[in-house]
Amino acid sequence: MKEILAFLLDEKIVTSVIILILAIVVSKFSCFFIKKILNRGHSKDQKKRTTIMELFAKIIKFFIYAIAIMMILNKFGIDTNGILASLGIAGVVLGLALQDTAQDLMGGITIILDNYYSIGDYIKVNGFEGTVVDISLKSTKIKSVTGEIYTFANRNMSSVENYSQNDAGVLLEIPTAYEENTKKVEDALQEVIKESIKEKLIFENSSYLGINSLDSSSINYAIIVYCKSANRWSTKRMMLKKIKEKYEEKNIKIPYNQIEVHNGKEI
Image (tube, rainbow, N blue to C red):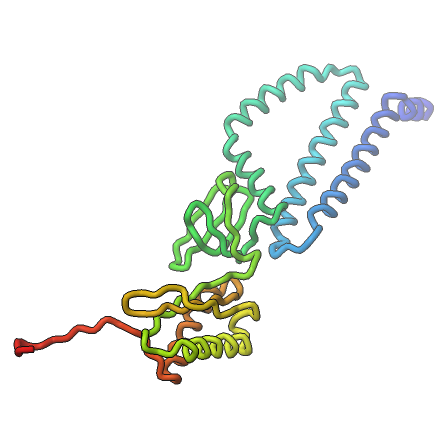
């Protein structure tokens, strides 16, 4: 009994137990603070934040317990310099082999932490536009309006235009015949805007801009409508439809090219 008690009270054993307890406490507190930091603000994709939180927690736990084990081995007189040297060489080789993968992982972490974009956002990257359909720690998948899905490595996502973080502005230019009264046309377009706002098709900051250009066969009137970015194409189609219907209601002409066929007869 005395031998067991003496063994348990040995300075090396007591110090090792204290080191392990401190490692556990530091690990728990580190994970707690990581969770607090990653849960700040609003995110459309909480699953991604959870993935990053778990990844960081595992990395921090690994390093804390690795340091604790090295300290305990040193306490028992085991030389850890050789172990560290071997791990250093292996780490350099592995780092060089997985350099691109490491950059992708860090890129994925940055994208999620800084909220560059989330699933469902409409973005533009390297000239390609589409909706984000998947984000992993290694890559991002974007679906175009015509259905193609492109996969980009996260290390290449440093320059991204996110159209979903703000309202989308859609500029519409409506060609109208020269003979139409300007005030009549302006009133008709303003009616369309007011009706569309009332129907909640567009936002209240949408407005009539005025005459945008004078072409050879038409006066081009301009309006700008604001809507959710994801709805900008459907909103554009709907607004053009409503403008044409309003023009028909008010007997306002939209000019178009016409071909006269004389069928061989003298003019």
